[in-house]
Length: 472
Image 1: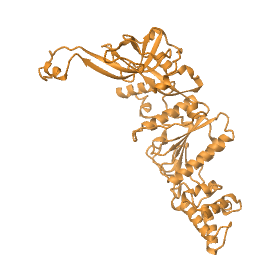
Image 2: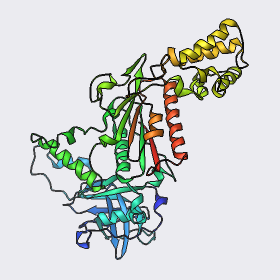
Image 3: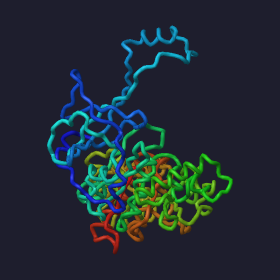
Image 4: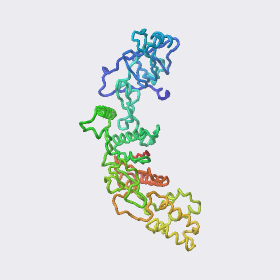
């Protein structure tokens, strides 16, 4: 924690269910020597021999009514030996089997960093002052929990002391879901699934504590996010009487951790979680996704549960947005003017034809007859027609259907259409874009964000005030 962030006085708060008798025992006392004194930033204390603490534990030093809050940085063990050679010699020159070795005076000393004080006075802690492991009340004072209204508290994790005390850590939800911040960046090592797991926990916390929020997740990885409404192995085996002791212990720890934050350890609500998977090329009922974790190991969308949909765009779905659709082709100025004319002129082929194929066929007639169209020369028409052909037929993975106007199956649904027509607070939409081309990813992402903007700028729906978007 940054030193400057704690210069203010730490407020005193009340915690329900807490009584002074629960205060932690003394674990040590402040130490200082001629060579190593304490300052306003750091201090040392010796640890009572029977006590066990961890680095990063939060501690408090009491000097009368004054409290100094600190965090253990490191722990060092000392003896009265002058050198390692002396120790080696006193054990019969390295006899590891020797039991009657010379007794040594041994003790542990911890180094701690000052985090704040109760009186906002930055005087160093004094010699021999008692040191305590921070209890629940002290940690909540340090975290300034009392300054945050209950309705804005979003649990983002917990602090666990070496004495097994767990204290939830809260974030002001306004800095995550808006309007004050609305941004989160999670970093860490790749291929450990730790970042993804934490973000899923955070999404669950948002949905469990905020009743006016919907969540949209763009899946850019494999299949892990395509079954988040299913319980994980531990939760699924909870009712199994043959559950081994290790799994029982881990399940108990899992539930305790979630409960200390006021959350339920459970999967996403099946009735409020919907998946949108891209279609295969020329196979509108087939899924172009990683099938390993899908409920049914088949690429046929009609065999999947009813909260799974397949999406595919036709000419009807991109009208008025050809400029965005063809932006990946880097058109020059004349070509862009022609694309804009197709977009904005309601009598153009883009608005009067039914499919991308029909549009390209109509444009090809001007190329063959060497005639202009919408003030564009045949050479310009030829290039734009090739752009449309490339994006919607040759290079597409199946996100665009070149020949169809509509789909017979009710399992076809664009995520943007669902957002505009049906999105409600408490729902989670998972949109899979992992296996499609980059320009298709950009199109789907832009289409979804445009739908969210239209919905929310228009006033949203009753009960829906915020839409949170994650890219995982």
